[in-house]
Image (cartoon, rainbow, N blue to C red; front, side, top):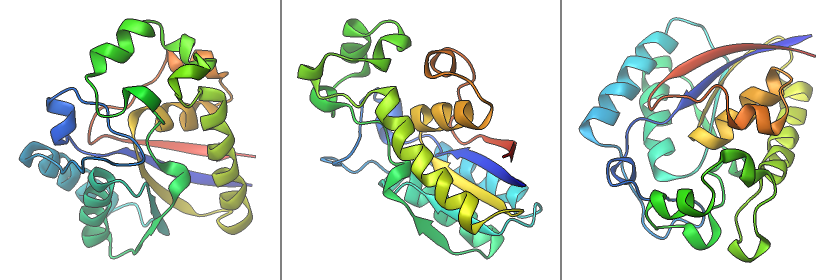
Length: 187
């Protein structure tokens, strides 16, 4: 069996241009920028022609806004799923991205981060993403599924779908803001 996934990263958001990390819980709710709305509209135009069956989205504001633009173009209803949320940034949430990169300059270090930082490891992230995929396998076999999420979760989801290890995923493919990548998952 197979499922065709369309992995969509939200459009450019206010926190992106300010280089601020923003994860659950959302202390500050960042919206898409005008450019981010244009990116989402371009992706929505493409997705309106693929005859997808369902849209799943992270519940954070920037992904909600992106998925609603796609829903408007496709006529599909959005299903929000907490498992697609942004990576948990712990003590770095709402701080400058450079602070996280100062402590974790190599993405592979986030496979097993310092517990005192409260960062979600890539292993833990994969656990919630695998749970999401288990549900997809059960309910959407043979279907086309749009997934609207964030860079790190999409990177790891892509890795699961293409059989890459967490470290390899953390240093390989990474989605651009507002982009859409098709992946056919054969299981």
